[in-house]
Length: 102
Image (cartoon, rainbow, N blue to C red; front, side, top):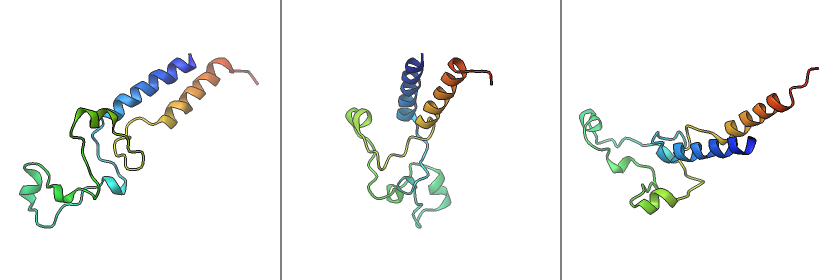
C-alpha cells in the first residue's frame, strides 16, 4: 500500500509539475519590467521579452516540453512537494500499522 501510494502521488506530482505555469520566486524566474514600458503596454499584449531573466529559454518543441531537465534553474515545482508526499505517507503508515497504545 505504501509503495502504491508513493507511486500514485509521485505520478500526480509529475503531472502537476508539467502543467504548473505559476512564476517561481527564485531569482532566475523573476520578470523585470523594462523601464520604457507604459502601464497600458504592460497590461495589453504579450510581455516584452527584454524583461526575461538571462538564460531564459522557453520550450519550443514537444521534445523540449517533455524531456527538458534543468534541476538548477527550474521554476515550475511550486504546487506539489515530494517532501510532503514522503512525510504524509510515512505518517499514514505509522498511524495505520504501528498505532500502539502507550
